[in-house]
Length: 474
Image (cartoon, rainbow, N blue to C red; front, side, top):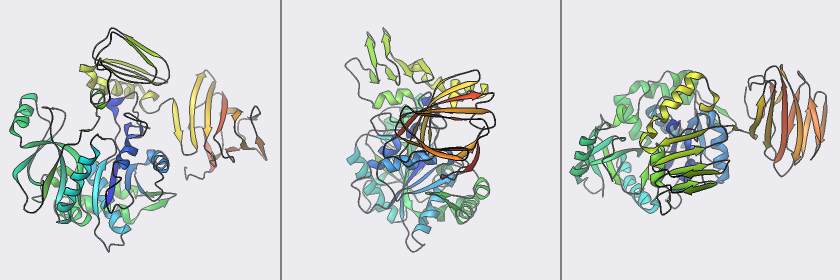
């Protein structure tokens, strides 16, 4: 069984924690591990698991690789989507790639999971996986239906038959899929006992999925086969062909196949599941104090109840409020009534229309070599705190519009400055004039920390001319 992890979401309803360049699946929201890492960790203990296959946005590839490395997963296949085409093409390229990894001699079972879900009852989840595998091996397309605990209007619903499928326990024929209902309809679904929430998690043999896709969405299969057969390897990544994949119709697996196939079955899952699609959903799954408050970071409360407070950098004090969301990051603060928290999407849309960087980037930006934090900036200057991982190297580059002054705080830097190459250690510095070719490397065993002061007429990240890069960036 190959775990297929879909990691292409944007998580805009969790702004300012979640941003386009670092969405919620890469954040530590409920414990010290990221949601992607928790998704992989909850598979531990399942039998006959192959290395995972992760499908992600090209912009997120180095974060995926780094978070897998932190879990000591070195044999994963990371597939890069050049553009988003929804779940059907994403799963199709995973199925085609999985068959190729087996040299088309075996027909692997694929366990398709989203990278950004919370599941609190791991044994119950694993039991459902074991049950679903029996149906998948019998050629069924399995969807996991979440046993509803409320008349939720934010999820689609799946209606199931009343009887188990013969000889496959806890597995039911799917009779219909329903869109997100209004409150009255959701209450009817809940009372009937025939409906589950649509989780977006699946299991099937690769051949079973591709056969049904050929029947109901042949253009998706055609485009995805060409995209995978024309793929190139880029370091640790499989880069599917851009032109071919972009030609695929964009569609969800539900619409493209599952709603049309008479081979779709459902395994109910009652395991404390949440897609953490908003701050009120995040509040639901977090541990709370006696007043119903869920807090992270340096928080002080007085006469405050039923609230979510996240302090990333500063002390956050909240007094006399009920049912609120307060989120503080290095460059933005969100304060909202929990009942109106869905309107975060409106704020994100306005930020996009204004061209504001806060919609895409955190002040702290991650790169394959480490990260930088934009500590201060003004007219014609910018100050960054740069961290370079042991053995990592920034690209050989130059700038047309800015000079840079580097001061090493800790560790040792191997610096190329024009025609010279030399070491810079703690409390030492070097100056890079405008137009001079330079590079920065950490040859040591500990992280390299330095302060970079930029000065010039233009300080944008696109003022970089790269001559060589070990990470394959243009």
